[in-house]
Length: 177
Image (tube, rainbow, N blue to C red; front, side, top):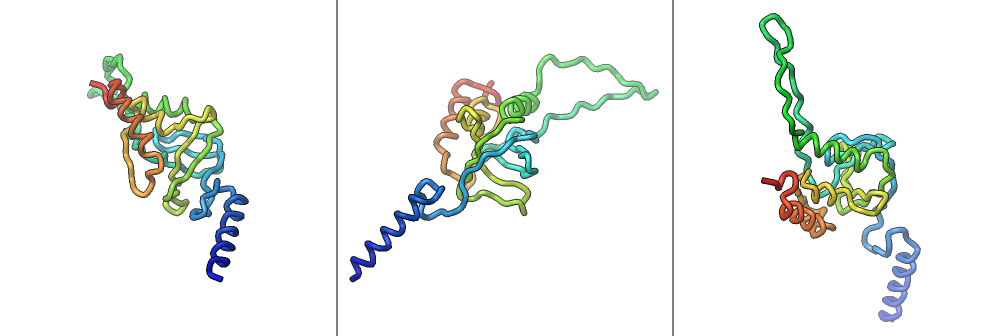
């Protein structure tokens, strides 16, 4: 009797798993993936979708917004011309790269254990580009963001750490001399 009940339960679980959209994950019934259009890149780790939702890329942290240059004024209120630095600040390079990578692209969002919520202001997701590459790892690989693994979202921790090590090895961005 117990064996028969156990077999029925196993059979029902298998039928449910095969019929679900969660690729057979019996223990997590929430929606794990979706496609969306990125309309704005706020920073190298934060995007805005067409429907207004804000998405924080899991496993990375931006350098922050590019620093604003303020004009210096002389005693008469005229702008003092400062020599222009020939280099572009890393924060600006990171934002530009993220914009080129993500803006106006249809991406796939994949959620981990903590998907965030709209009450906190943003969702947490791994963001996949139309070519299938993970944007989170691409930004790390180029050295434009810091690695920041926060529990419980560790599904792709190894992939992100590998991208970080590659940037460090090749001395890119933040990891450069």
